[in-house]
Structures are given as structure tokens and as C-alpha cells.
Image 1 (cartoon, helix red, strand yellow):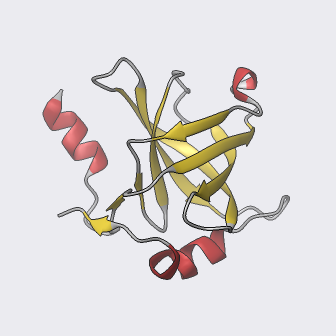
Image 2 (image 1 turned 180 degrees about the vertical axis):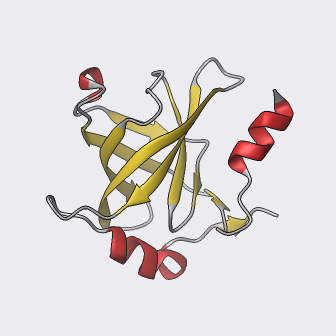
Length: 130
């Protein structure tokens, strides 16, 4: 299981970062998970990159679910409206779930994906994972 998790979460084409500060994620919409609508999840174990976000959540969110989220850092006044597809879900050691959202652009709703990608390094102070 450990080797599977390492392969799933290791990507050489995309730098990943580990959070050093609090991050709040609010799910705005998920047609596949109506029980999560409007819930705010304060995340402590999180990896972020310009193209993906890894979260630890209480609920077993289905793989291939589409989540419209707002990401807000305690250290910044800016929030980002993002859309992502859940590509991986693994149980965590604390009885929760790790999910990876692969972020994408949407044209039918407001999206800050381009700003998220272009401002990532200057707006977020994270140490790179080797």
C-alpha cells in the first residue's frame, strides 16, 4: 500500500509544495457529493501545486467527482475560485481521506485557475518537497 501511495502522489512534471500555514477550503458545488455543499474544511495536511491540490478530508469523496472550491490562505486576503476533478483517494493514518484534485479551467462559471497558476510562487510561501 505504501508503494502505491508513493506512486500516486509523486509527479516529476509538477513541483509540489507543503503548506506551512493554515489553509481553508470551502466546497461550493459538487453534484456527485451533495452532503458536502457549503462545508468549510480547515486543512492541516495539504500539498499544493499550480495544477493540483491534495487535501485531507473527513468524507470519502468519490473518485472522478467534480468539486468547485474556494481556497483561502490565512496569510493572504486573496481567495481563489477553482474547479478540480478528484483523481485519487486514499485513507489517511488518522481515519480520514487524502484526495488529490487535478485543477482545470472552466468557462461556464467564474474561475481563478489562470491567476492561481501565474501567481502561485509569489503568493504562497511553501517549501518544496524533494
